[in-house]
Image (cartoon, rainbow, N blue to C red; front, side):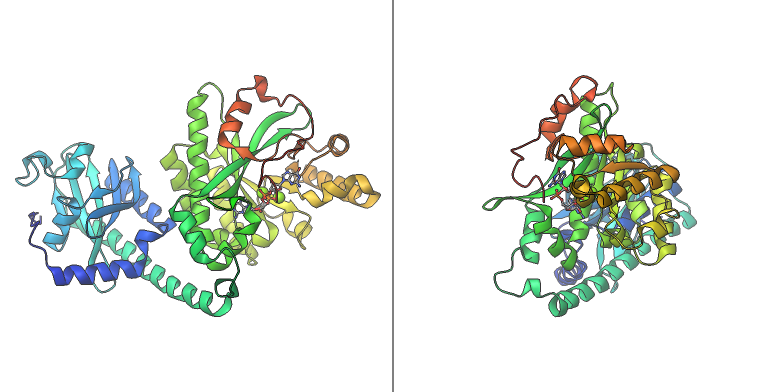
Length: 465
Ligand code: C2E
Ligand code: MG
Ligand code: MG
């Protein structure tokens, strides 16, 4: 077993410089972590039957937790951290009983605040070998030590992180190249927002989620919520998604923004569940962009988010438009299948606007179909749109799917949709998208039934596109 020695103060400055340069090249500290990191910490926890597993990266002064399993842990000071021990050892460190360790027994390790009794930690290296962080298994009880093959396993798991970082670095270089060569939005003067505007907004936590109720048409009972992102800009006010999502998609920033949205929605579900312990929280549906859908490990990422936030998969829905499904039907089927197996509701958004809707619908595991607002809008103006809506409702019934009509604004649309047998709907007639606090009040209404059907004349700024 490697002996852990704290060598704080004996800093190898040259090595540290190379280490920080390698760390910066991965970009890991200023962007969202790979979804695969959660899969790795989960796998590690399962293998070692650990209470907590941390994957962290250290800059000059702090250790940044980028994925964890079990106990949530915040960023820690680097001084006297496990990372320092691994760096000093230049290899893995195993401490089977913290209370007997000469350097730690005096409460010198910050992780002791977690009442850790034992741990084992392997270095996560850059491609060139610099130690960037650690993969650490923590236990609340002392353990027997660690067999050689177990230690090897921990090191291999840390090596998988290294290969993910390398892939990330390559992807980043490629995206930078694409942004420079194919996306004029970045360079054309006067175009707003730019990639760096969005980056800053993300760092300054200026994005917010608004929620629009989805109701059962026969009762006006709230059965779900759609999470719709807005940008709370300090000077420009509340910016609707269509003004920045396309740039986020073009520049690749939709991935960290989308990750934020998913995780914020899960936290909000948990808050509502805690406020209303006697009543199930409504399902919250989050919109996914094409690149989020195409990213490897989406189902693992969603699963990890649900687990970390302690939210049941039944309370989460994902909305995708047909065009955001990757063209490779087999892969789309596989990804949707793994999401469905998690128990997440899958919704085809803006149905009717794509080209091959009817061809694919029967073979993809969507459970809800959302009729695009443009059909609802035109429904009262002529026979053809009405017929289209009738067909969509009937088709969904045959396929065993629920139908949600989007953009219901008038009583006439409302009653026609009910006559056509459409069970669910959302629209300004019931409520525009509103902040979470306003939803909290709605959730306290008796039976969660929205009281009146007055058209919302004064929808809040940014309520709709
Ligand atoms: P969507 O998913 O089809 O969302 C429905 C849009 O219709 C929302 O616009 C909503 O405010 C608006 N709407 C709802 N009821 C009515 C109505 O009665 N009348 C009218 N005129 N509009 C209504 P919003 O919030 O501006 O979002 C536009 C689109 O932006 C969304 O369309 C969705 O595709 C995208 N989006 C929103 N949030 C996110 C997000 O977090 N991630 C991604 N990738 N896309 C998002
Ligand atoms: Mg949607
Ligand atoms: Mg829609």
